[in-house]
Amino acid sequence: MAKFDLGSRYAEEFINDGEIRETLDYAEANKHNRELIESLLEKAKPRRSGNGYRCAGLNHREASVLLACDIPELNERIFELARQIKLAYYGNRIVMFAPLYLSNYCVNGCTYCPYHAKNKHIARKKLTQDEVRREVIALQDMGHKRLAIEAGEDPKMNPIEYILECIDTIYSIKHKNGAIRRVNVNIAATTVEEYRMLKDAGIGTYILFQETYDKKSYLELHPTGPKHDYDYHTEAMDRAMDGGIDDVGLGVLFGLEKYRYEFAGLLCHAEHLEAVHGVGPHTISVPRLKRADDIDPDEFDNGIDDDIFAKIIACIRIAVPYTGMIISTRENEAVRARALELGISQISGGSRTSVGGYEEEVRPHDSEQFDVSDQRSLDEVVRWLMQLDHIPSFCTACYREGRTGDRFMSLCKSGQILNCCHPNALMTLAEYLVDYASPETAAVGWPLIERELGRIPKDKTRAIATEHIADIRNSNRRDF
Ligand code: SAM
Image (cartoon, rainbow, N blue to C red; front, side, top):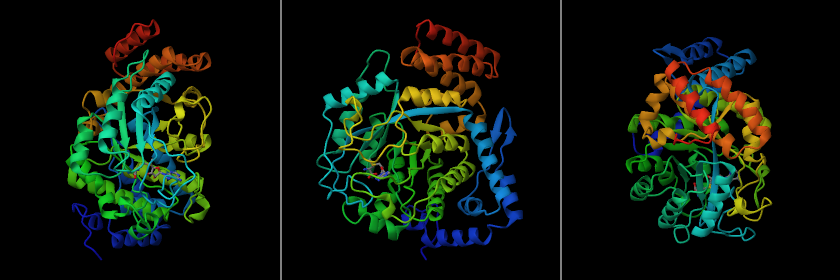
């Protein structure tokens, strides 16, 4: 067994197969250990500290015991604790974003992804800068302020210069009241120099899904192309952080391998980033494998049902309380509603997963990456969120004010969220209601804003936010 060392820069040492397997045995052996599980729940619960809360979090071994827990009453308490932690740190705010597919050219052979190089059915497309502009205007017309750009891996068709040019185009477009304020990037693992270029281009979070932490499966699922290199892929976040990117987003594609293995691997990865770089992942995404062009998810035997999926989300929330969690439109409305309560802090809305899809009247399917389960418009998603008492937020203030990496984490830990993020979220929601919302959505939104303003603890902050929102309603703008 390779040495287990979270502080090592070698993938096989910080994602150590032996350690993960021992963790799974330990979790299985303790799945009925009421005393241990109760002590973990006690350890992980939010505690008052100054104006805010502190949570101890759990390590991969401890969290794996909660995930394996087989006692129904304790499982209920796990869900309840996840809800409490979510409210303590994120309140009822949900950050909105949309993916923007730039190019589906890809040289890899990933067996679960329709972009794989051997797929001759899928229409290959790469946006020109004019097309990027039209896509972004379509997204701005919906009200989006935050995008995640996506591209296949193809050094000739999608070199870093192309990605940088697209980022530049996106940030440069000012259209009506719209401007994209944060571009997150989900492109293949690359070099420190290229990560530095992305940092200099002003990206928000660099997102890269591990797909699976199980090296043996990884090699089989990625038989050809640069992505075949497990170590290079797994060490990508270290290179991104060495290149100056503070905010990185992890994720595994659930359905490819056994979920308990993935869960432990994901947490080892988060612990490794914290140990080496002093800050854990900014976000964790929880994508599940979906049907796509020539991909049938039933051909992979590790699909998980909605209950296990919910439990994974709850256990991640408990283990890494300060990390944002993202759910995409791969999931349907009901699954998303449950996930939001248990820990999700960011969701996409009105998404199209085809290259050039936003410009089209009707959702195109010819170059889609996967089937979208939640096909509602952004307006419908925003209204639905508010009806469930969440606050859809279009805020990007932290990023614009340089609160990334550990500076963001300190804000989270300081308990200033209700005085800082909450008013910002309300102001950006007010902007959305004035600029983009349908009358039905606005009718739900204004009373919600009114109610939520009352929850801002500091009198002065509440007064300022109230005044700003009145200005927005009267179309008298400031930049939040
Ligand atoms: N090319 C980049 C890379 O190699 O990481 C990422 C871009 S890809 C557009 C984004 C993610 O989509 C992948 O990391 C993978 O997890 C996910 N994906 C691929 N095929 C999928 C499928 N059939 N269902 C759901 N998600 C899928």
